[in-house]
Image 1 (tube, rainbow over the protein chains, first blue to last red):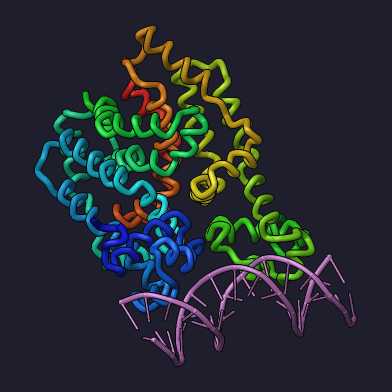
Image 2 (cartoon, chains in turn purple, red, blue, brown):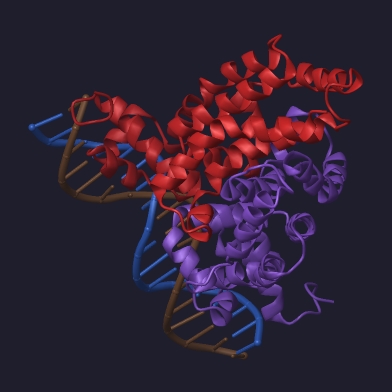
Length: 203
Length: 203
DNA sequence: GTCTATAACTCGATAGAC
DNA sequence: GTCTATCGAGTTATAGAC
């Protein structure tokens, strides 16, 4: 029911703005496009959201808001390391399957204005991987996994889950695979990423 | 000598344009910014490069041009698989250490207009991983590495090498590391990425 | 709340002097 | 080759009727 002509005007604007911003970025998006996409006129956009900047922020924060609590839950959980690596990649991949354009959108804004990004997104309180870092060190000491730099391992975990979404056109072109095949590959990755990591670090 | 006030005007424009485009993307960059960055005025920009689009293309193609031959050389070489994985990650990381903002720039443009991107960048002739794909399959059959999907393995190789550059602000904020520490991590990765991959797939 | 019309502004591009 | 000045298209934002 959300996001069709029966939704409230405000909800339709937000849905339309999300599509347009996420496709074109802040600078590339035009208010006219958003209005057309929502089936209304520009004036009404300004009636609901004073200006483009405020609308952008709203979309931006909303798109990611539901993700951070999930990620934090994984990072803070008491699950054993291998299980945690599985949950980690599944949470990421599930989010981006639902919002495939979000990663590039976030990366672009984060790189353009890192300060403002982190302030607006987290208010100085980003997800904290401390517990996971310690857990990795412990498992190295306990001899369960080979000696690895915990920071490098976390960078690897994030890279393997996020990058395929931003590199999609490259993978499709270079490996000559269709959209459907790519989505199949992503579904496989949901489980296989953790397997790939664990195979690398287990003793 | 390149890129200071003693360089030729044309060279200074190109260097300035690169910085501005790469930071803000095509849509976000303004000719005024480029002129300021180059220490000249807008009119002169148009004197050297007829318009923004042509200037953008010039930067775009030039930035990546030296990379593809190197990558192709690795992909087509007769080196054994493990050696090839090492060369692969080293070629990527060396390029992006030299041009740290290039990955996000390329990913943004590639996602916004995939067709035009590949046409302009390669003229329909992108780097071909076929030989590497076959090589991976052979090593699986030969029992040198565990059974892996060759496509997934290549996605992993690229993800692990490229993503840290686009995720840099996130890693710095979340792991609470400085710019200098991040660069140290990247230098470590140059060797460790291949090690991480090989540990995962070797029997 | 929603619309039409238009003001105000940004930015790429050009004219023309030096 | 380089500059100042300005035009004109495209966009954000507002005024005001309904």
